[in-house]
Length: 126
Image (tube, rainbow, N blue to C red; front, side):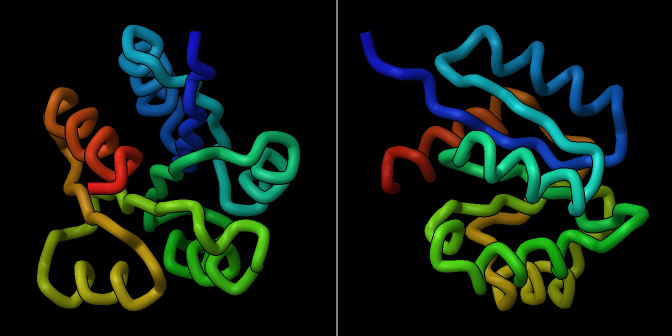
């Protein structure tokens, strides 16, 4: 039996974190959550996730800053980061997410099946 891959959801919206935990529990993923960038660093140190879903607009530090910190750290730089955000999907926001190290940009509201497919593709190296 293969080990479940861990996905970290960093978002200040508690209902979204719970919904994603439920959604992913039906697939072969373990979901851990953090409600802020600061708390995410503690979670990452405890269980190194295989992928991170990261909101941009959060109270303590924005997702771009969190991503930069993770990409500057040799221990976390290879973790794929998918921005999952309600911030408008204009070209500037998408480009900024890629420039700081994100691998994908998904606009809220999103289709759960599409999100799962995109995560599977990233984790499978595609």
